Image (tube, rainbow, N blue to C red; front, side, top):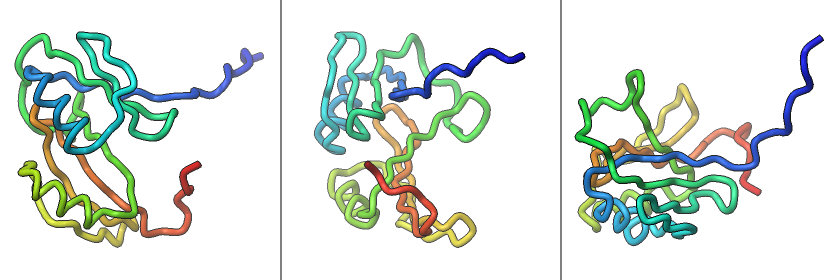
Length: 137
């Protein structure tokens, strides 16, 4: 007989490692406007989804090996908002490394674009254009 399943996870943190954490702290705090919820010195943790989703910026132990995040071991941070176009304009105005204009993807039912933070991490801002995506709490 299998053991009972533990309760569901209540929160989630994605940690990103940067050689220049100060630049990333400025990017996530000032440019993206994320709320700093805890500064542990070596790590800064920002709220990305109320009290359920968080992003941590940590000093890297060494330089990145390669820049393709969509391969094994890679990370893509996706931020979901109905204001995709407004975020695109804001990031361009802030001089962020935006890779392309927002585009609709009919196969997945989203509108999105990609950009990079100061440490080279790939981020995506997207909107679900399909009715089966759950609305936030």
